[in-house]
Length: 206
Image (cartoon, rainbow, N blue to C red; front, side, top):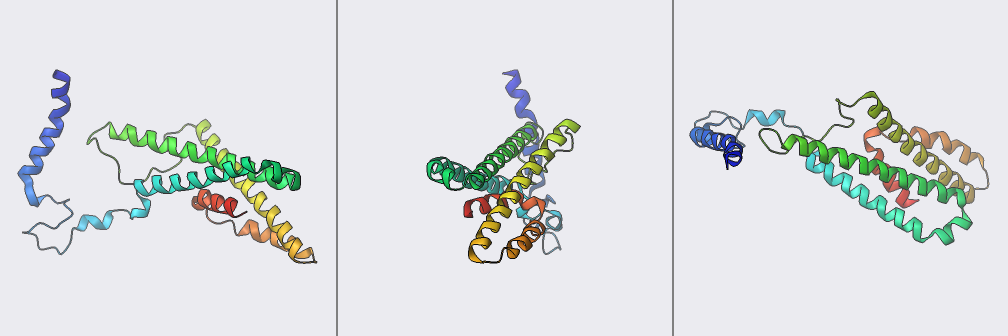
């Protein structure tokens, strides 16, 4: 019982303060009645919803679902895919496995960080998305994280180059077009923060 009373006391104080201040609280979403402002000025400093924690979890979960479906598809089509194009199959399977590993690690870090912060005052979830890698990580953790990102990016880009090479080679008789497409596919890789979604969508379309 003393433990329960101790845990409820801060919340009770906060609730009492909120009732005492009423509509004059400066961080309310609606502007107080006695205010001369047209809108809450604190909303100008709020990050966009695209940078919020719910959006981060939603997009990471969607990319994880797509990649997991691709992984199952590759397993079920192994008998027909492996004899026809072993290099293509190995690259796609390696890309799917490494991307799944990166997404699982991302979800674990985001969920654990959110849980730890929710155990501190004011016992709520943060609005802003978790920035990866975390600033308090050691050098070993940073090296492991960046190595995993480099591995995912490298395998997916190599898979991209191989597929473009074979596709263009089949459509055209001149193989020089395939050679020219290789640096173009590397340059057009896209920004790093779009790597997981870009990798998943490309592997699904491959």
